[in-house]
Length: 289
Length: 250
Image 1 (cartoon, rainbow over the protein chains, first blue to last red):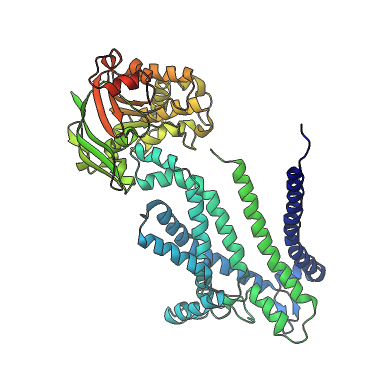
Image 2 (cartoon, chains in turn yellow, cyan; image 1 turned 90 degrees about the vertical axis):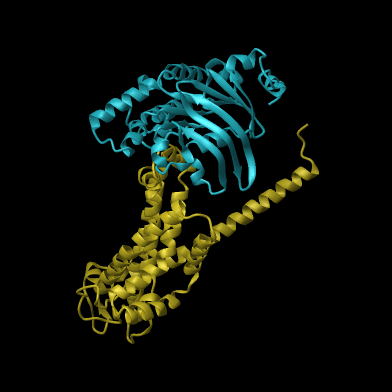
């Protein structure tokens, strides 16, 4: 009564074919990541030391450490976050909770999607025109960070809007029905339940910001600086640009040094990403409904 | 005294009529039942009363609803209106806050900050909603993690925490077991002396057990309003009402 028919057998073969096919495609994804990490660790790890991380480059950058670049990247990320997070979160709250569904809102949403699609070199040129020249910030940390902030704004907005919209509508309606204003509802029920998703988005933004090179090249990052930056109107070195410089611009560079810089940069990004994943897993465990 | 006066009410969504020609008065301290099959316009009617149409741009309300003899469409402070009207939904909504905070939310939104005062309100409302004994030792645990029946009683406690003059229950027993339903029904009978209750239900027997008067909605019209017992003993004016309460359709 349960003998396989011709059709059963055919379906079973096909099912197995797809399972194996799709599975091996997925497996291929790991390959580039593993190769990149493997090569970086193999070639770069010997360079990494306490001195490498915490001293300045010497000898025309062919020796010494990368501290100014490391510090510069951290500064750029922090200033960029200070600008983009309040702006992005505010915009997302408005779009998700207040904005009526009309042509204007749809135009804004379209603008955000387009902003995410603008190539980073175009952002760089915009940054030069707007922040360096028009606002007279000069080539500085401020100008570079603001350029980065605008570039990563869509990441924050989309992540925030999605975590706000994951809060069930019934919660809002329950609040409205008891006489709460929209803001009271957002403050007491919506935001507390969306905050973790927002944080995840912010961390993703950090890793994106840290790795960008083009937007900061013309707006605030320097080839080499003998001194550390003293304020946001100073230029700074940055890891991503430093990597470009040591791998292409300096003759007589020891072969391993660029790999060391790359390893530091990618470790920063990976640590940030793992933090965001850990946070998401923690949240899933604490889900409140 | 008339608590809620409804005159020539009609409601449409994006130009499509879902309810029209509603005329009746609801007396203070009365349990007013509304029965009728799905899509009769019952829930839309409740939304119009506490001005939830504000949150739906497609919903338009014509005619007049007077609460405490004030036209609700002319009330500027709709938040004040909503605070006087407690609402309970078909599906229980335990907010993802602690049990305590669920009940303390409305008083807090209303400006109550005194902890001792809040403690009293929380205990009183949970007790009246027949939930206090089950949760008094774990007021800090999440309201959204209670069982369905408990969450529905929590929702009622929350509605009571507003100290409402009127309570609107929309098919509250859909997701609740029969025992809990009977407990909530007992609660409602006790509340009758203090608040006016609008009870929307698709269980005609529930309306019979609780409601003083009952309206029958059908296909976007209010077919009949009368003393509940009359509807069940055949003193009806409309054949459709008789058919519905006797279970011949719907």
